[in-house]
Length: 400
Figure 1: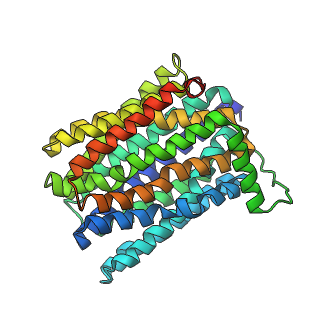
Figure 2: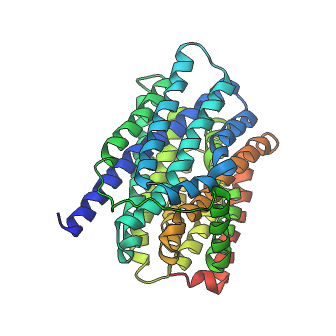
Figure 3: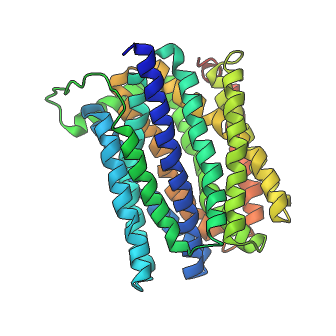
């Protein structure tokens, strides 16, 4: 089997596996947030439940990176998907047996997120093991399309399904998506695994990884800006959108699904644009431009007065998302040794998902005092400023 054929086969398997599991993620997120809104009728509780679903990355996400650098990364990915499949099955079982306890659902969401926290750094550090450096940006862009297609088709599919089945059934679809993903991952051909021998404990290895990150100042500041930007963006993205649909636009769960799908459709277009831009601009410029677009387009939701208008606005917002994700991932993979990738991507995951926990909780509280549209306007401007800062710093602009 030639190396080129093996790489193509691995890419196809990984792309399909990610498409299926991320479609399940999109359906799960939609179902969970709408379920909580229906059960509690409270924006504060919705924010707190969303916070619990992302809290594991904040609590021990960095240690997940240490495991990724010490263990077989493909096996970790399979284990994490299996754990997510089993835990998400508990939610419909609880509902069907009449246990509509919001704190039980909160606990299950927390456990599911624990497994996802293991999966993400393992995946991002596994990719450079499968493909050569000169193809990394293109590979990341291709894999990013799996997420965009999944987040486009998943919500649209959920919106249609909700006209035929009850909300708890959507959680079964998410569990099935992880099982199918595992079936594909086991056929990936990986390089020979060599167990890493070390006398250091997990804490020492974590400190070593963080010290290396601090020594790489452009990447260090890129991640710091990621933390700040996501404090603005992620809570409104996760909690603010369903609140906007339900209370700001008087929409339904299906409307929420179609708005989420519109954002993913824009992100799919953005992924193709990124592959063209990398031939003319550095990854640093693309990343900072994406931050600006991500923020400024969110601020436009202040003027949305219908579901259809929100769908158009969120479509343009989605275009900027791959600018950030593809370029940031490629920068870390290309500018740092693979032995640190698990720990470095666990920091990135902390910056994305960990801050989502904080941001989601804050959004639930803030929207109990001000309108959700005003919130989007303010956070959009704040996030756009992060992009302008990135463009203003030469060392960040020049990151290849």
